[in-house]
Image (cartoon, rainbow, N blue to C red):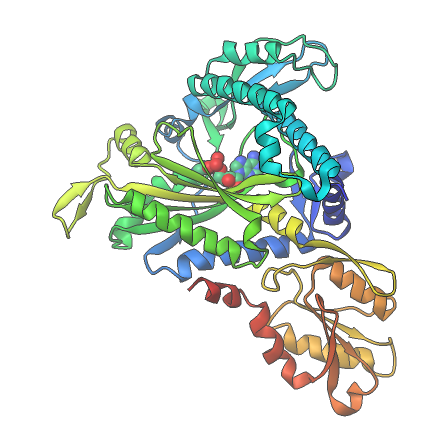
Length: 513
Ligand code: GAP
């Protein structure tokens, strides 16, 4: 199945099974804003718990905070967001549609890549087992020509972006003859800078309202609380502050479902270190974060690092953790060495000293920062993409199963009475009432047992138990495993000990040690 179709199926599945709905659905939605449904919120909460516990419980030098979304507007001046948190935008005069100039060009580069891959695939088909891919790529005149054009465009584009040369970006769009996908014309406006922050007013106009921003990242809430936490927690460098919370960006081009949203959630951790040790910590955090991702068991081939060529002016190293989504490898998390830029800026703009006196070296300094920043929604999408499976069964039927890591699954156990009579529902409810204190357990009696299994497979429930007539005599149930579909007879009294460990967040955390 084409990856595009897989992605469409995942989006449809998310809606059909109560994971993700378009926001304001009965009003036909609101662009790039989504709501999480009854299963989505459970999965999302489990992802957040996994992250939070891996940071705050597993590290005795990391603590958490929860700062407000509204912050003093000067914070965004100090951080550089008022002046530099921009995307280059361009309008098509005929369709009146707005685009990100950089995205139009990147899409053009991707088209060259696609063409090259198609050439290679065609040749592989033609030459079959005699095909030497590396040699073909190095010698095929067609591939070499495409590669040369692609590289020239990439070089020109990188230079324009590094210099933020808006005229050059427009010129590239014209030279490459890029057309508006809606109007099909090349009637482009100038390229302009567009600030991504949402703003609103705080206070009544009579008193002089103040323009405030909806935070575009949670990180600044951590920086401006650095002193509070360091002093009240008597924290010693190196130490970290973690936070999970909403962030808002007025993205020009919001697409790919929950991949790029206007309201989203971040899990960020700022790790404060002694200047000069930041590269060592940067490597450590790269390794730690990759381990966290891979502990989910989707396979190492689903992840890769993408080191940034172009660094933000305040960073001295940066990498992305990319995940293999149905639309290719995409950034899920950023790991950045941000020097002492943010703390120094806040020191300058607030006029308060943010120096740390290091008792080990008898020196005062502004700590350097390693940041790990991951989007909850992108993480959610990566988990859904890897978990969504269509399986052909021996009887010719197909089943859709979400192979979610058990610790992240919204529901851990479904208890199903074989029939709705003969005391089986009462027995099943007894089991639910006992186990619901330990993990998310639900009761389901509607439809045939086969249909109920399929329903649980579709939301990723790792275990189902069936209560049948024998249960009333032997106090045993049939326990079904979602992935293997194997069934075993177990005592009701054993259920907690069999299931609890396997579905707990602790089972994941133990893999990180
Ligand atoms: N404090 C650093 C920071 O915000 P970023 O690379 O802009 O860095 C970090 O964002 C992460 O936040 C990204 O890796 C991504 O997972 C998530 N993210 C950023 N913009 C997003 C958007 N519009 N929609 C969903 N997630 C987004």
